[in-house]
Image 1 (cartoon, one colour):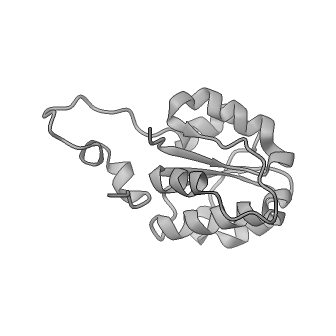
Image 2 (cartoon, one colour):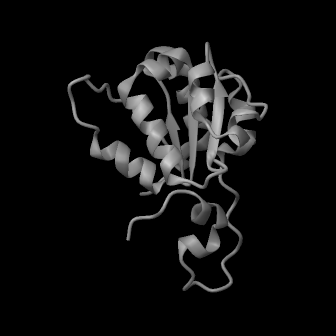
Length: 156
C-alpha cells in the first residue's frame, strides 16, 4: 500500500520524534525502522517509499547530515519534487544548518517547527489533504489528490 508521507530521519538523533509523528499519521506514513549497515546498497523499500510519497518530512540534524543514507534520501527528495520544495516539511533538531543549506531558499527560510513538536509538524503539511468525496468512481488517486501530482512522480 503506497503511503503519501515519507519520514526521513537519523535513528540515533530522532527515532522517538519520528515514531511519534508516524503514530499520528497512522497508515499514511512510511517510516523505516530497520538498521542499514554502511556497506549496504540503498534498500529498494526506501526507494519505493520515496517514490510513492507526495510529502517528505526530514528531521534535520547534524546526525542526519552525517548519515550517507539520510543524505541520499534528501537528494532523492529534492530531485523528486518541484523546484520550490513544496513537497518538503522540515523538523529542526540539533544543528540543522547543513540540511538547511542543501534546501531551496524557499524551503530553508520558512519557520519550521522543532523536531519534538510532532503536533506542529503534523499541522505544517506533513499530512496530505483529506480526500474529497469521489464524484466519479473511475477517477484515479492522482486525479483526486493535487498534492500527489506536485510531489514525486508516481510509478506506472
